[in-house]
Length: 213
Figure 1 (cartoon, rainbow, N blue to C red):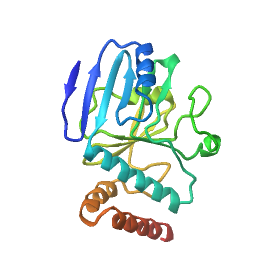
Figure 2: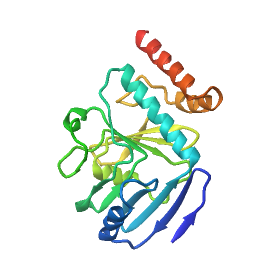
Figure 3: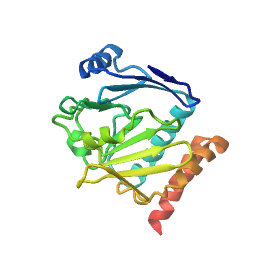
């Protein structure tokens, strides 16, 4: 077992864990918890988000909500939904996940089963302290088409290739092509000065200016 202290996250890594133990832990821990789990190839990471992590997650989540609102896109949010496939023996709980293109297919659902339902169109990962598990192969196996990854300094967007099931970094989100990636860390920093409400209001005005121009 390896324990890594951090300012933004705390992580515990367990090795040689069976899939059955992983799913039993999910059932025992329940849904009302702060920790997020990731499982791949017998390795289990338990991550506990701390203040900086959760504040950043919630704020970027608000930015995504404003983007969807101004672009008139239906958005269904599932938060840190447990995404897993038993036949692949892989699973993860993102910081936030969203259905946008596939929103009509899950609109009336309260629970998601990846054996019959499409995966989320977009997953948000806050990794200010480097994760011990590379989640990209997990999300690739689950078929997540787009990942937003924020490391405390910059936002990266990763797109899933249908050719080799790997992720490639891109400068534009196909879901929100209007967004300037460099703007996100600037908005996060600005929210700590002016407050989140004012910063989100200015962001909404910026989007409207981009649309009108």
